[in-house]
Amino acid sequence: MSQLQIWAPRVQRVELGIHGRRCPLRPRDDGYHQLPHGSLSHGQDYLLWLDDEGPFPDPRSPWQPQGVSGPSRHLDHRLFPWRHREWQQIPWQQAVIYELHVGTFTPAGTFDAAQQKLPHLKRLGITHIELMPVAEFPGRRSWGYDGVNLFSPHHGYGGPEGMKRFVDACHERGFNVIVDVVYNHLGPVGNHLGRFGPYFSPIHHTPWGDGVNLDGPGSDEVRRFFIDNAFMWLRDYHVDGLRIDAVHSLPDLSAFPFVEQLTTEVAALGRETGRKLVLIAESNANNPRLVLPPDRGGQGFDAQWNDDFHHALHALLTNENAGYYKDFGRVEDLARVLRGNYCYDYRYSYHRRRHYGRPATDLAGSCFVAGLQNHDQIGNRATGERIGQLVTPAQARLGAAVTLLSPFVPMLFQGEEWSATTPFQFFTDFGIAELREQIHKGRQLEFAGFGYDPEILPDAEAEETWHASQLRWQEAEPGADGCMLGWYQALIALRAEQADLQAGALDPDGVRFDEQRRWLKFRRGRFDVYCNLAAQAQTLDLDPVRAANIRLASTEEVSLHETHVHLPAHSVAVIEDKQS
Image 1 (cartoon, rainbow, N blue to C red):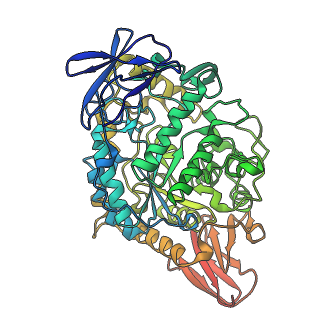
Image 2 (cartoon, rainbow, N blue to C red; image 1 turned 135 degrees about the vertical axis):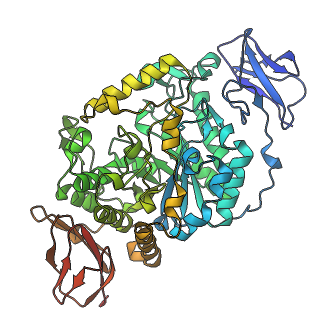
Image 3 (cartoon, helix red, strand yellow; image 1 turned 30 degrees about the horizontal axis):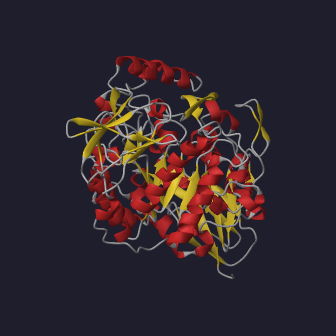
């Protein structure tokens, strides 16, 4: 049983619709409206009426079994029979993250179906599973970044119980779980927050319209709404961390920014529960203050996504130079990331036409999440091609090695490990003709800077676009071409076995390169990783000359001699110093 209270300072009267009748809530001086007598029971459906307009779902609805426009259903989190209330928490420096989208990870597109693939991820060596947003969104299919019922796991994925079963199963098998949450905007369909209170501010503009009100009148309760949402995932769903989407689009001029309040309160929750709760920021600002502790003037995140790593590696492998890739394409760019975390650390960006970023050389690599692929960098291409469709298998193996042997926390995107042939395209299910046209025109404009033919853009609203993006698991079955899968398993196993190869301190002096010959070498403790990025074989001197052996190589044609290593085109070798 739970007492219902609704924050709705913009209306005079809130009524609860239940059992076919409407019951008025009692207004309070703080803008809340409270059920005067009795409580809601687990599984009970209800709706809200605001000054005779409605019905609307509860802004904090924990369960939307009929979607964003249906009734809310009350949920008592205490009733779920958790089997694994105590579970292993994996040290962050050992993390290997696997990003997956529930709706395309399996043909069924549910939490329960995703649970059946956990043995595959265990064999691969994954430690952390990161779910793209799962909060209730309009329709049956979406990336999840247009969610509107932030407290309710999507009913099509299996709802609250389906998600809890998935998290419980992950903990049983030794995985930690991270959930991607979106606090910078809500979706365009089913979003009624503005009717209840000042959740949005016309003072701040974002790509999605008015910014979330984090620093104006009423912002205390708006902040509380989002922080309570974070607490719900961490406490009621037992997840181990959150990835906060686009924190650069959370406009906030207050002295105590919302993101710092969030990290501070989550840290307190971690101390209270005895768990290390991980918070990851996505940001395009190259600002190391995100991961500095508050007592050093920072905002307290544990890590942030590193776009510079992806862009530098992608541009080297593909030779693409349109859009933001125009700032990349040199071996030096990747070397700068390996030496100092960012490539753009208050360096002039031709894409942005200004100096950009701030130095982060004093931070460990474990403060950054790096990937050869992720949902953005695949799905925000015109047709959603993966790296395997853009480069040769040898180049893809090279890219995987740089990612998984780097000093950063590595992240894979679903299917990357077997070089999945399926794209990951942008898809929605709003069912509104006007929005369909707006999305198509917006994407045409977005991709004009990359030189794409606007006629090739898939229809985001078409069901076949979603189906085309679903993984084909037969590609990963025994008997299929498993050389890429075996390579990923070998890289992850070596990283797990050797502490020197896990996320940690940078070694700027250990990074060397030759721009003309297109080779790169970086040191990880007693290991040197030699990368031939050129289209022809070459021989590289061992530096320093020492007794060594090949610990892992991307091809059997790599050979080691007393003073040098021979590398075929687009190959990589991990050389171990036996004298250490």
